[in-house]
Image 1 (spheres, one colour):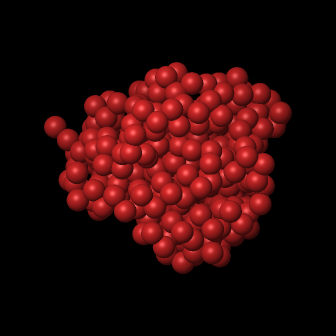
Image 2: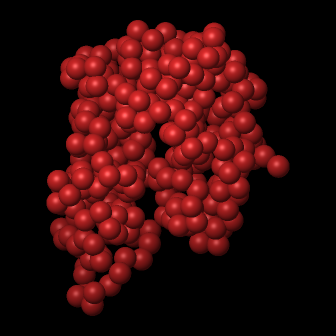
Length: 341
């Protein structure tokens, strides 16, 4: 049984900052042009990824601050911000400042760090332990919310017996004081914080307890539906509404009239982006390819499973192909999804 009833479906698109950097383009202008076009075409949101060394690109906070000045209505998001690469106080400051720049249009997708050697090397270079990264992220979220809500906490941080005040935070992984001196975001209580993760029991439990949204990239719609059902049940057990968590989806598409050529384009993309073939990446990432209607039908299975905010990544390293497929997605895929196809 699906979960398609609920809030209006929203469809966003990922800014190709990593793809641009891989092609030697480190300018901000291409991202701003892409953002303006996505807004003109009617997409609901724009997202950008984060990486320090593993898959380098321009910093997402800086990119979205610039995009905020080039757009007026579209939601801006990170997919996903690796919070551990920034001190929790610095992160709280940056996110609050970005939400001000975006006039409250911000959603912060957060990742603890994908378990691959490249990410572990990145953490080591930044001087951050790779072990315990999930707990560190959850504590960072609690610290941010305490700062943004004037001392109010949405969860229980470990207590070390120091009697920390309402503007102090003490946890296993981080501690900070003077949180009342940080700027407040434009959004009361802070922007929504989503967890980008899979459907493992630990991730599902964390989403249900602490986060405002879930942004997985699961390759199986049935697994998506099962995990979402569990998130909703666990949210109620934690005293939250069943619909407290926005069900998102991060999906990569290659749109083209010839399905085999679209598949080859996607394989070229994964080899260039991840250094791995499509066949391997598709074991744990959502990848769709083919005509716009074929891609819409594939994505529709996730919508029927309960997804309410679909984030599309265009699976091409070529800027011209990215823009062409962006337009085709707006013309065909987005209307089909909104119509319930």
